[in-house]
Image (tube, rainbow, N blue to C red; front, top):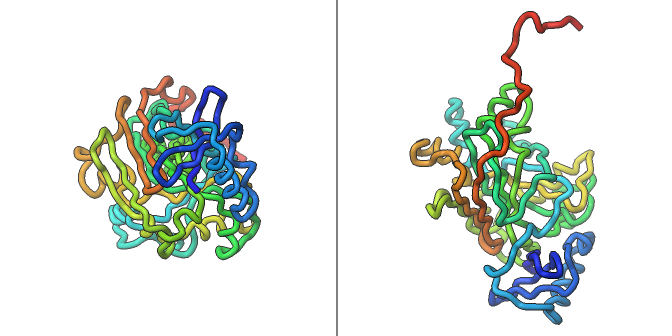
Length: 322
């Protein structure tokens, strides 16, 4: 099944995309999350019930599309080796650090600032190096506690496109302090319009991913292209690792990290900053994955300047003894 959420005169409503691309919209169902928690049967029944008796039918592009789910938490990883290789090579490395190949590497982000597929993204105060990141996100359908990669598949409700917007100058400055990313990331992420259940793309499964094309564009110019099959780690492995000696709540999302060609930072390292400049207010970004639709986001100028509490820097007079 492929689900969407759209704004109607009656409020937010769930819809199902039919084989011909038309969307059938529910009379009263406004959230997918109540249909999580099993092996996908409840979602399948929901889709069939909407198809059997839709409130209305629409062309996909005519809808006022909302984010299809409202995540309660967000973890993000880095599973595409070709994406990060240019940065490693700039550090004199031929490959990544051993730990990257031994276990997934990720961090927590901010679920409270996740936007919909057509919402504008405000550049954060003080940022001059604004970037997008094309990713796929797994949506967790039931709580996961110390599950193995094999068991993790039972906790996966579906997939959506994810853009982890990044203020690169803020990100790298704070990471000089040996923690982060934090303020370089937490101002906004975007979800794509279509929630795709695993059975919908099972015939495209290949290795650690799915044989689906992932593309990015800015102001109508194609920037990068990759296929999900190039991922080093699978979504099941990310779910398992996240849950180990911990708890991943139903309704959480887990991001893959950027695919090859999926951000300006990587593309500028491969080519030049002149060919791939940082985003500015007014730029229009389009991020797409086959079967999952597209994120269309326009960048807007910051309503705030740089953080006003910044100090001038270290001085000997500020050192205190424990």
